[in-house]
Image (cartoon, rainbow, N blue to C red; front, side, top):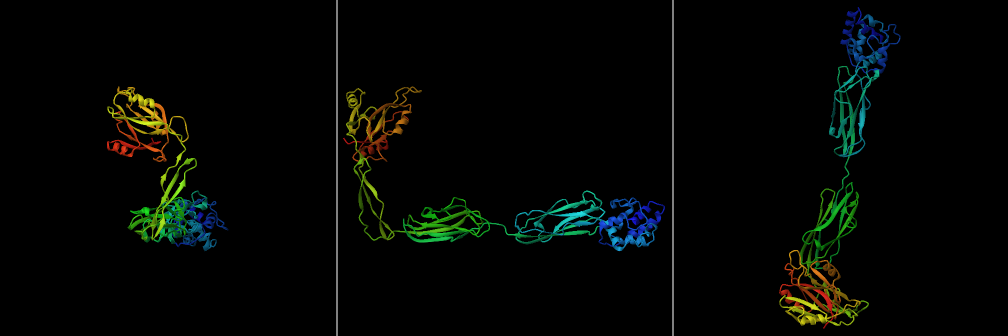
Length: 564
């Protein structure tokens, strides 16, 4: 603007006194106006139709930030300029009639800091309570010719804590004027929204600017957003108490159904379902809650069922508790279970037991005898399961031809048995040493020729070789087994020598022998630590009981042989 060019240039000329007088008027009149700083910039540098020029803004310089001769005192105060023109200052008089009030407003706006916000409000879309939104940015620019200083930035309002502010606009930020193409003419206010609860949330960001001529001196950014309830699961269990009433002992009640529902807004995860308590084993579980691998997921609004039944195993009151572990509040969910066991009420007497005879498996002779009794259930007699009472099934075996004889040594207190007639003769004639005598014939066994349904009997003798301590490695005793696995294991024991297969027998099944075979029991003296182990093989249960009374351990039925 030539007028101001001349005005401020005059302060460097012989007319310095007049210039100072004009500046007094310029700086003492005032009033804030909203002009256009961009238009004011053009007028600042060149007033149209003016016949006087100051070298295209070379007098006061193109940058009002230099504040040559205090020209910023006219910022946002057009009256200062108008007064200088009317006072008749020589360097200003030519502007009389060239500048209208709007142009004076524009010039004064350019000579002051002019903040410009890209938005006066930020509205966030609905956001789940407790979660953080994507940030939104408001840009602050300095559109006047003078730099803008941010004095303070504050967030206030009823929900100020729900909005967080970041970015480059902070207290003390200095923004260069964008109208004179300087870098750093803007900064950003970055706002994020994290509602603490549902409903409308509001706050205000207030930017306060430094400098008496800044217009406006403060600006506000209205913040708003809508908080929505967080997605959370919930667990509703119905009912939470089941009384089965009186149920006959060992009978099963009618089933009762429990509904596990998720009225929440997020999936409900069921970690485990279990029955605990003194009588937990008397309550059974089934249902759709049990039919999938855990954790089971129940969607929002979904449900599953737990079906419970009660089978009392005793009398009187029975109690337990169903525990449902889940990821919602109130875990674990609990359902109290109760019922009373009562005695059956069938009228005596029960029906007589029933019997049936079954054929043996293919390839075996004999038969199987079964019976079943009647069981009082509630008030009715019901047939119980069939139970085998006799089983004489046996293979068609060749005739047993070897007598199994037992000997006893009074000096060693050891038992020995053999089915070899020559070996029996040698023992009886003293070839095996003194103290041996025959006690009884156990029964008949088979020779070593292979035959169906017969198994070999391995015989071992304690290893007489000396060990590291100079004593023999094994006991002065014999051991017999028809168990192939046991035979293989003893063969690996350095304390025993394998003497071979000495005869054949029928292997017992589940500790018993098919009829008419005779079971052979094995008893052990337990003298392993003394290296004096010995076993006795007997067919008479009374003999086994006698040996147990002497401290021997019964090892059950190990052989099945033919009767004598």
